[in-house]
Each structure stands twice: as structure tokens, then as C-alpha cells.
Length: 212
Image (tube, rainbow, N blue to C red; front, top):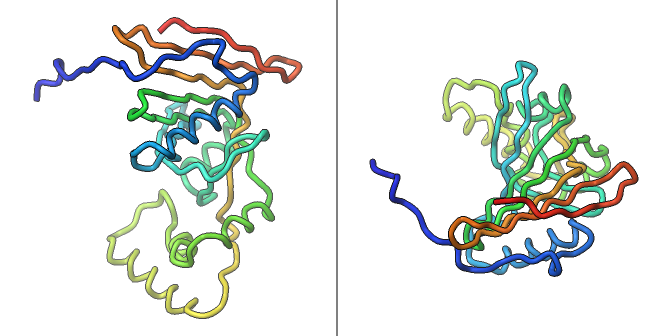
């Protein structure tokens, strides 16, 4: 397949320094709100990059579940590859690829695991089948077949057909505490607008424009 000629110009919008919020979380909220109002699949989907003990990065896509001044939170099996890597190396990066808006948001920082109470609050808000799926899957571990996974799911579904499901000990949330947040807006002739928020030693945010 010849893919060299696949290209387009980014003509939708621009981004000026004067338009940016002083707080990157407010800027992110503004952009995410627009993304949720634009026809696209999974506007809260973000790619998450972690690093293993061998120095090799790994990448996967998860869903952002909430965010505030403390950071960005997603939930996972705490024995998954990403969780195991984060226990050894807290460095993490996120990418929101809002191609319909010709935008990206890139976040780098450190991860921390949220409290059991915080994880429980979200877990109990999930659909029951999603709760059961969390119990059925030993995430990132090899399995013999999909049939075995589905059989385990059905067994658990029958087991918990009545009553609540408790928070599994191996399931919880990860919060990314950002130290840098980049807002990228595609522009004509590849002269994209890029602004980087960086947190200084006093916890204040500074903003600088980056070359495309």
C-alpha cells in the first residue's frame, strides 16, 4: 500500500497565546467540552505510556474517568502490565488524539494510586456486567482461549445475579499528577500551534510557545 500521498491540510482553527487560560486544567476542560460536543468516537479515550524495568515503553488506550486540580484519573486491574510498571516507575504520559478537531493534548507527569475509598466509589457506579468483567479478567496475563474467559464471566454473573459486588482487592484507580501539558492545534502548511504549560518549583504554571 502506498501511503506517502495520504495527507491533508489542517485548516479548522488556530490557537493564540491570548486565548489560553492561565490554568491548564481549565484549558483542558474547555477543549474536552468541545470534543464531547463534536461527532467522534470516545472523546475521553487517551493513550497511556508507561516504562518497564527493561527501559522499554508500552502503550495502550484507556478512558479518562474524571479530572480535577489534582490530576487525571483512570481505573485498571492493579496487576495489569501498566499498573505493575507504574509501581516500579511513576513516570507516565497521556495523549488525547482529537483528530476531528485537529487537536492533541499531551500530558506528562507522575502517577499515584488513588485511595480504596475513591476506587470503591467509582467501582460501585459501574454497570454490573463491567464489575463482573473486572473480576473475570486477570488483565495482561496469557489465557488459553476466549471461551474460557466467557465461561468465567458467565459463572460469576450467575454467582452475583443478586446482591452487590464488593471492590476487588486487585482493582483501583491511577491519578496522573501533571508537570507538563501541551496543547497542539493543527495549522496550514504544518505550521502548527503548540503551547506548553510547565509547573515550576513553586507549583506555578508557566506557558511557552513551541516550534511546530
